[in-house]
Length: 350
Image (cartoon, rainbow, N blue to C red; front, top):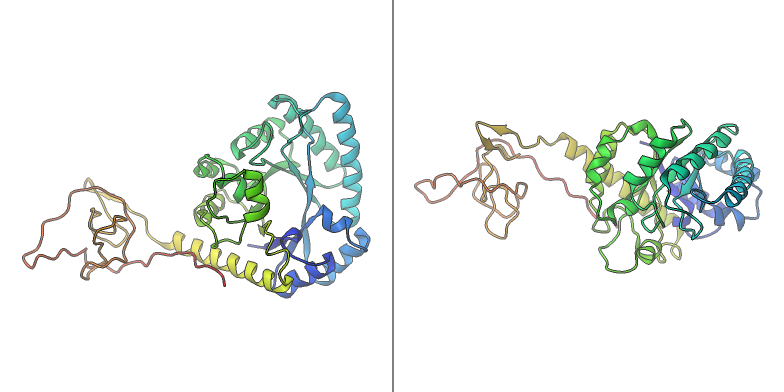
């Protein structure tokens, strides 16, 4: 899969950020509006510089507080969007991220939101631009991906799809497993970030404590597995707001980011290749080949068992509570002597 990084993740000028991303092998970048505004180069010059580096401008962001607003505000927002589309044509970007509104003017009206997003997508289509609608975890009325998908589905426009952001999904008490039911072609973009588990305001958590995949506590391999199952074909893009990253050397940060994506991909590959537990003759079977029991591949604090060898604390895969098998004469239980499959854990990038 293509690999991308948001310019907001890196330190320095926009030119320095593009150079760092290209140097470590990224295929594309998300350009954050503040980076472009503070850049001395014109959008056309930025486009040429990205092309010289072999980078695709995957997405331009953000476009805020658009949907579910009164008529006067909506007319103003369409004028804002027109100027944005013209800039994107000059920049060479064909995907705009629209965040769910946090404005006090927005109403809790999904039908109105869908209608206004449909009109935005229609306007975008005239510029060969698509709209990726993202549910912010702190959105005023739309704050989870299922809600944003309901609105996108109602809007029903081919130029309107979803942007899924791992932070906005995994920081919320919403089951990410339902992502498997989404049509992959309607997922326009995927942003990835990890984070430590914290009990603070979600906006502050997002803006200051995101980190690269494998450096936090989110189950990013599980999330990516669900998204890949939809048939998603877009890039994996890092969008990490982190105060330390924005002060560190841009190339070093980009290197760590690329390493984290490669590790995440490798972890997912091993997960997909590992045989899952199956049900045979009324019993669960562990991935090590033996019948799953509290002693075989358990996650408990007691002894655990690896395939064909004496019990060790290394084989921890199943949470089954099936009865334990009889104890052999030597007093030591063993799993079925089939080859074991090593569990894949995402290592922390250095």
